[in-house]
Length: 251
Image 1: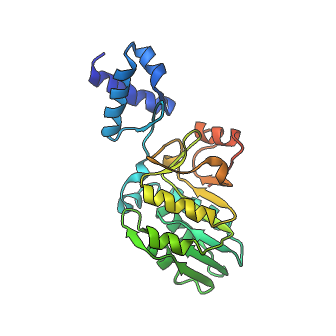
Image 2: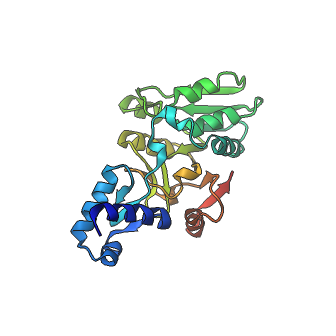
Image 3: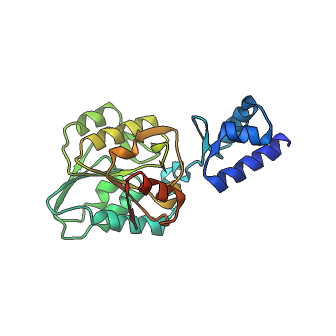
């Protein structure tokens, strides 16, 4: 099998199985482990997979820029936003992450809700301005334009003073083995910090993020209360998540 043919085979296998186990596939194809590693490296360089220890996983389309993400899974994000909004209790303090799914949560909040929303997203904060009984706290800092959120030392210092009841977390990948991931190291660190400032964390994940992975770990699955997703109940990753004891709310 030529290198180009192996690449097509690997893409098809990744789509079929949702992962590639390098040693097993090298044995199946009759090639060396070194050749398989090179093939996986080339696949990742082409943006067709995310390399992980021992193989590869599907790459998340949610690593695109903010404007592009706004046109991905629009209806699903609206449903996830509504489901997440129901978790917010009157009088509570909630940390709302940045990103297009978090923005859908902000837009789904009822007009008479009385709560405190803490966010490091200027777009989320501006979407809450019209709600008379929502107190808004903006976490300032350097703006990471790719996700339209603040990050860095100033943002981390401001976030360290927050104590919240709930954190609604956005990620680019949710995988039973790789956990929760995103594509920027500073953003991953900020998300971890925000989760630690909250009594409970729920993950917002439209279906294209389920079973996918990105470069940087955010949290392990056992560090969150559950996942809100529009992915089908019989999705293999959803089944695996529930099998590991994680609550999955269908939107």
